[in-house]
Length: 341
Image 1: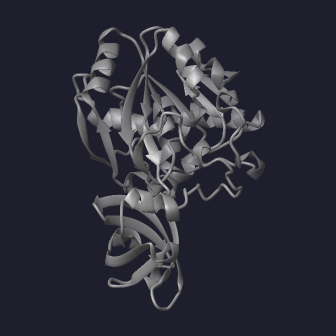
Image 2: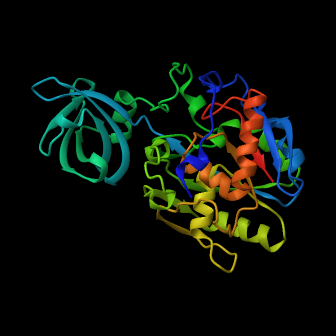
Image 3: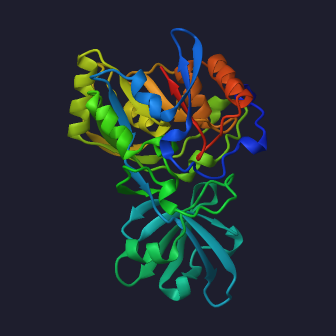
């Protein structure tokens, strides 16, 4: 398939710059694959589409203040790091700019010197492996000097940094939020619980590869970045029981989909696992575990729109996006949501 197959025109005014005051008041475009029909609802109406015994699977990752603004030691040249992946206790893979200042051996300082870094090596796509030096606990130092890295299409200042976290975030490690989960509230979870809908947690630390454009015209040639995932025995037990009883596994976001499809066996069961996944899901993929999907609206020609196209059918997704644009839905991270049944 060609990259241009996943292009659509989006008016810039529809790119949401700020979250809504109430998370669950986002609009919800319901895509019914069996009826081949659309419905326009609000996210708080989600429980109406789920049945007792269904299981929603959420990604409990938490965004870290991964953006660091500093300067080169001695020369004072400005530098920006974005933490991508922890390699060892104090060793990280980072994206940085400008790259010409960051050869192996170069040293940088952040936060008036409370955090320092040395470039160890240059790796794939110009990323760097760096070692950090500091006193105390790294996470506490990072909280002092780091900034939560908002996506490049968001230009507004976020007043409340917790609005770029899900209400159930708990495991630090992401450079970007799993945005389909931003619509949930504690009250909505209570409604789901009362209806007998189960919740299972997985972890996938979202890297900035999420925002990197696909550059190959033939999408099969695209290389996915690896991201850390984990799923424990409790989640596996809940999900396996759901499948055994003929109920639906409802993935919240493409990150949850990638975990579930990574660990699913051909026997339709999953087992506890952790590691790195570079699974690339595009049309033609046969889903083994996911029965329904809650997702936001994604960038044109992104791996995320390819994943939802694999799940719902490319033509149907392009029609759904056309419908959403005509109804002036809000797009991307702080935008509205879609439920694919």
